[in-house]
Length: 343
Image (cartoon, rainbow, N blue to C red; front, side, top):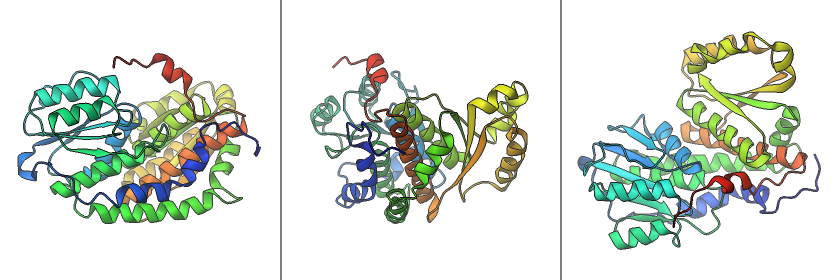
């Protein structure tokens, strides 16, 4: 792995500071003024795109089993028609200028839904919040691309804890931060598991599999990070869904696929026993038609710690893969080329 790299935004170093950045962001959030009561809410809608939408998926995966109301993640312009004054709408946008998020949030305000925005202080979303007088959690200035997911999700989880939907949330977060510290010490060392994974993947294309809500969110994060940081195609699915369709797609062209694809299994302690068994069945069917099957096992106490542990490993693996090829992991010019900015 080359030590000379074009990391123009310092992404690798920023990721290695994640435990301290997360703790420094979360600890001062003692109370979010203006939130509704639990009795006022019949459903929760998280609005976001890209990393922000995935933060909503993370919130659903971790807090969903504890909430007494459904959590819906909305990606796009037109808000679901059920949004009403009994909906808690959480708008997530680091820049505060995400076109789809702005339009959907405006629609939520017009529908009379209680709003919480998580964004930076200098964007259009913050201007709207100031005009509306609705609650907001302000993100620090050092939260940029590839660093958004965790603070957006944790701010949302703290809000749900305060309302009463996610009991013990702050303790869950403390356990997750502790696991991030332990994993960071490994990732920063000479035998970094991220660097080892990057070498194993090499110039093959990763196919990432997870299980259940935790594995599905983690696998999607790995896919997105391979796309954004390493600038390579990557693909994902999850057990048990892939056992009903995708597994059949490995039935032909093994002479080609074994040269092209590396399968990465993301495992965690929250797997349903049937899904654990299915992983063995899937591996038996794909072993001869992929270059290699790599297994990554989450560590930490609780589903949040395990999910953020998998996320952390994926973030650094994608960066290490980029740097090994002399690719700048920070900028994503293709994304900027197709971004719509109307404000």
